[in-house]
Amino acid sequence: MELIEKGQAIHGRDSRKARRYKEMLAAAGFVNVHDTVIPLPWGTWSDEPKLRNVGMYFMAGFNERVVEGWSIKTLMAAGLSDQEVREMVKGVVKDIKDDSIHAISPYHVVYDQKPKL
Image 1: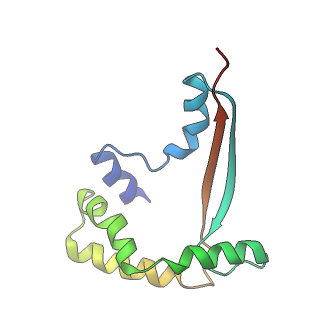
Image 2 (image 1 turned 135 degrees about the horizontal axis):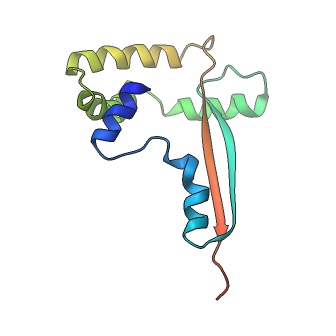
């Protein structure tokens, strides 16, 4: 994650921005701001049927080209060579498809209301 964060910072992006959406919306004047965090499993490893299903759908569109698209520009900005990025991507895809690795990401659903004038 350090390389991703370093590369994103170079491009003026913040991979952890979703964690601040609630406070950003409240600061902008919205009311009844809610932030629900849903666990997003990477794969079908979960014992819970609902999460296993979510993980299956998430992985349905997941492949090496998707990971490459997400990472190549960012990781090269962080200092890796094209070849290093491609090797890392292959390892990431292999690990994500390995159900013995229980990867999970937070998925933020943020909603609010406009204040009454």
